[in-house]
Amino acid sequence: MKIRWGKISKRKKNLEKVIQQCQKTLDKIEEELAKPEPKLTPYDIEMRNFDEVPRGILKEAKRQIKIMMEVLDKNEYMPDYTYPLIDSYSFDTELSHLLFETESIYKICT
Image 1 (cartoon, rainbow, N blue to C red):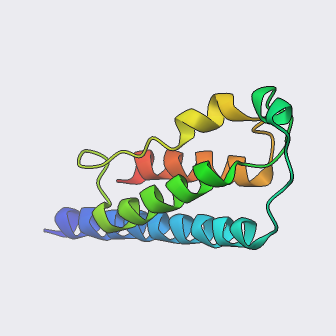
Image 2 (image 1 turned 180 degrees about the vertical axis):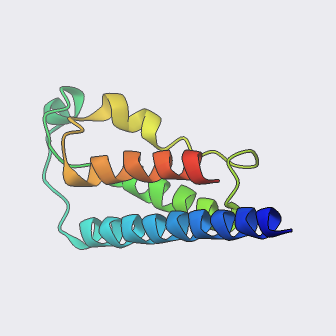
Image 3 (image 1 turned 135 degrees about the vertical axis):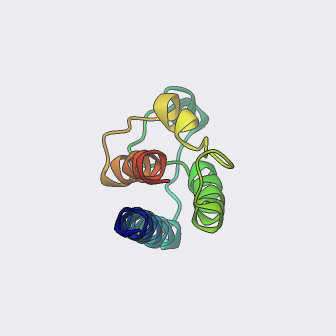
């Protein structure tokens, strides 16, 4: 019986960790979305000549992270917001690392 309670307790802690990580990421996304939108030329966009996560990706990531927080089960829902991050811009920013970390924690802990 103790083993069973231990597993439940560990799962609950893991899910709390996922929720905290998701909330941290949502807060950072909101912070980024509150900033003025950068002025980019079509050439900059085509050449991926910018160092921020595009707003479209941020909005989609925000939507998917909210779903992750509700479902909390990688077998029922797995986000795909990181795919456009990989080839859409230079992903060496704090926010991009946070987005990848959030997906990784979700995979591991749910």
